[in-house]
Image (cartoon, rainbow, N blue to C red):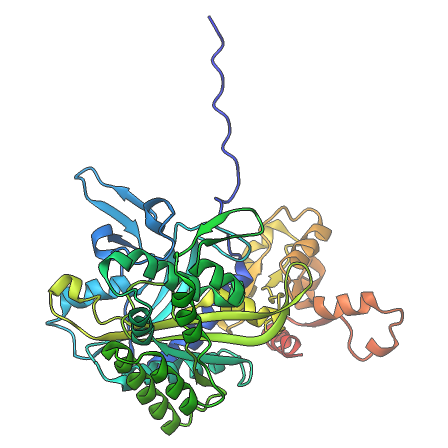
Length: 491
């Protein structure tokens, strides 16, 4: 009888397009979420937490990456035949919530939501299939003041998390203007729907592909560096010229930009309505003190999602970083949003105006790290070492006192036989202080407190002269444990 083969062990690897986050990274994200929520709350928005899973029907088909399996979402079929999917953003679930609970919610309804979203997209450097978003939306108001407020709040949020003025710009446009341009270019009918989608996605890639790359996608198509070919919209030269003119309509002042846009959409009621809305938003922001250095009207912004119906906006970081090859480049977009007046209508049959913004938290954290505004190092807990197994109760009492005083602390729980290993553990934990109490110290009623940060600094120097007034280890009465640790940490 053949010997049965053992089942292979599972590979300990992260799925492609996903990653794990460890202590310091999670702490930094938590702090950023708190800072963002503080601004959202100050603007009068209430928190909302929805399920990570929605029906495929409720999510709708709005993702731009339509060539991927399940059209960009992670979906599965239940035993009863229903299809469910992980949410790909926070906006589609909001539309479902508002439609479901509209009789109980105020109008307008202002909410913010934070959490992970999932997209079944092709992963790449810095592009993951799971990422965090922070959204804020106003549902039930058709006023351009709602859009202007979202843009102002986005600018204030970026400054609130540590991006100073001059290092960012919120760019604003209106999809109605692009629709008007499509009309002028002869792409208004149902037969041109596929071409319009390609044009939309091509413009949205302007910052990555440049004018030449977008022009290629408006025509026959484009082959990238890897040899992959993307089919273009198939526009003629005259049609492509109209679209390219729209993308390059930005002028030195908002007034001149508005005038140029009006010239691009003659005879299009939709296009002129979009220009008028954009002009209103500009006037409202100007009245609020948000000049073009913070929030700017820019026709090149279109956003890739298919549910936007009016104003769209995008926050871009303008400082330079180095790419993986050491070349300078701008960091790029970290947030975006817009008006989506038809999304709730899918459920209710009645048009419900809505507008909102989404911040990519992981990209914003990466931007702050690239700028050197957050440290890669995080301070670990104070470690109480174990010199005598039989006196664990004493060590637990110490750590309890430290915790009750608001100091992060832990008792070493490994094998205490080798004291050197305990200090190595403290070093790996980035611990600032170690507490030592052997039998002799216990009998004398004292503890040894070791400043691990200072000890590391002394180890790196050739002389102890400059450290004579600050010893890296001190002996203090047991009663002074908390006060001494707190003073050492404050240094």
